[in-house]
Image (cartoon, rainbow, N blue to C red; front, side, top):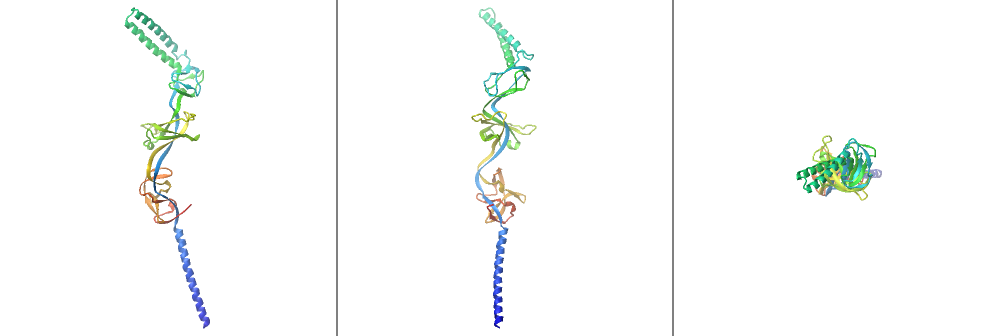
Length: 347
């Protein structure tokens, strides 16, 4: 009887132990299940911040004032009076052509001018002596003026002068070469200030106005950035490319590193706001064909459709759908669905 009693007591104790262990196992399993259902995410706070949208374009440099010297007649080059880097003044003769060539009328125009000048002097002396009428003096003066104009024109054909002050930046001629009409043989530019010429599409032209700030730099020296502003925008698009021409002016650096003809890049702030609701651009996703973000609240994520404004690679302006200080999911949102449980992660 005692043996039976002892056996029953042992069975009772063993049963109680098994029951308690089973409950603990169930509790552990539930905790593991809850942890497995939580999606690890990273979040950020909706804040009012400054935002800018910067567009990058490429263009070609010119001097602020730049002129190409070309020949109007086909004649041999007799002399090149400058070299690249020389400082020149307006009217300074840079290249001389053959004055006796078949296309030149220099000597004929010179002879006619000298003859008209001598005749005018004689007419003035005779008029002063009362030997001729005023009408004859006026005729001599008119002939002189016409002859001088012809001589100046003929001279400009064979003595190619600089139209502006600046430095010689390009020469494409040698003594003895045949100058061809319309072909650029020399370029003079004022490079204390430079201009960059670039093109933009129809989406960007509306955001580029005269005076808007620009940053200009070359990939050869990305550390050297010069600041300027847009000085001109075209009012119509190119028929072929459907693009608009834009020009920006900027000061050259102290050693005049920027040169005409260089290929450079220009950054322009096309849109800016000093205070807008801002979220990280990477937080925005499309969920059930709607653009929005997952908002984190009490360890639960819910999708919120939003309307956005300006945007760059890092930040996006929110027009509607969010309030300041709300939390949005920035990493792990592609694993979420409406009402998903979340846990903050440091990954």
